[in-house]
Amino acid sequence: MINLKKTIVYGINRYQKDFEYMFPKANVIAYITDSKNNKECNGKKCYSINEIPNKLKKYTLIICNRKNEKIDKIVKNLNFKKAYYLEDIAYLLDDNFMQFSVNFMGKHFNEWGCVRYKPNSECFKEMIYTDSIDNIKCDYPFRYAQIQPGGYVYTCCSNWTTMEVGNIFFVSPKKLWNSNSAKLHRLAIINKTYFFCNFDVCPFIKKSFKKTDTRFENLTTSKYPNEVCVSIDRSCNLKCPSCRNSFCNYNGAKYKITKHLANKIIKSGWATKSKHFIMSSQGEVFFSKIYKKMLFDSKITNRDYIKIHTNGTLLTKKTLDKLCAIYDKRIEFLITIDAATKQTYEKIRFGGNFDQLMKNLENLSKVKNENPEKIFVLLFFVVQKDNYKEIPDFIKMADELNFDMVNFTRIDNWGTYTDEEFKEISMFNKDGTPKKELQEILKNSVFKDKKRKVIVETNELIR
Image 1: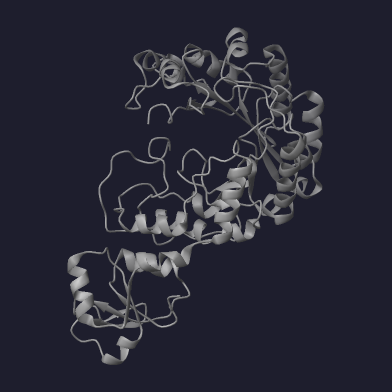
Image 2: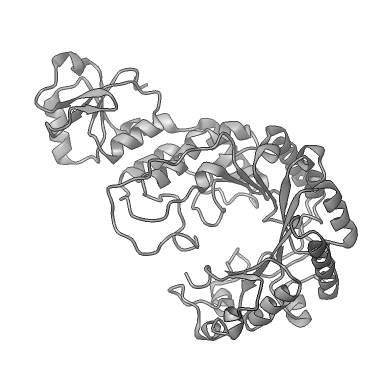
């Protein structure tokens, strides 16, 4: 085991800062630099490579740089008894409990596990050789947690990142939030490597950029997630081709395991202490027995407000009245509809009833008009070949209902289409730009209508 109780750090740079971020308990007593201009760092003395006192050479030297022949030669001449590159000490970052929980759930419940998890040591080693770039200042890993089926946790939207931070089935949410894995995801933003970011999918990250030597210094981690998205149950009353190939309703072992996860989330305090609490980006809130139990649990209903992601088909007057009676301050509804006509809706939202949906939306509009400060409504529209022509009418419909916002997103392939099928249904070219037919729709006058009250968000379509 490498001893970091008394260490000398060679290098004052990004790698030195990465080391001190990931190993906060390391006791650094001095620094070594190639320059004589650095006299002090973090309150500790700096020595040039030619003036190191022999008494320091009995301590552990940590080489904060990429390994190469030039650095190897310098380190050899420094004549320290113990000298290690960052990649040599990377194994100290491995969370063994995390590896076990991820592997176990992936093996025994394979349908749940996108299991993209890699040991922290491997990620840290690769990150060392990843250049820093100028890009967005993203605070998601410092404040956000999304819990997917099987207990997999992400510090970003699961498809915007390349890896989960771990699994809470065997580990407490608190321990996971403060784990080395979670810290690595934060470091990837701080040092501007964006190591875990999915550049092809994230709607915010810039696609063109330059290398940089700078980093973000003022990003702080909240004590617990300020925003929690619970997406642990895929049970749904619809079978939309863009999402799944069959109807899903958890029962048996899956139901018991998911119920255990729900109880764990509630007991952890994440559901009560977070500023934003979202249910859910997986499954249907008003169909899932587990979601409904969570939604009306006394520990959650004490919240100031809640965000509910739903398909709207089961948001009846009775259900809405019950919600309004319990959540008396604010409820945000995020409703995915994807169509403006009955024919299109019932084709792409298989199992849905457009007439019932519209009845529910009209009632929601009425309640919102009576309580404008309490109810917020955002409608989602996943753009694809079968519905893109209805974009203008969808905006008009949302505006007539006096809803707050509509958000247009790209269709993703969740494994329900072959590559050829997806190419046919997607309205985007290989380079990510909208196809000509969609570009024409986006020029419609409704987008420039100054009388329109509803906010229209199309950033993800034109990124």
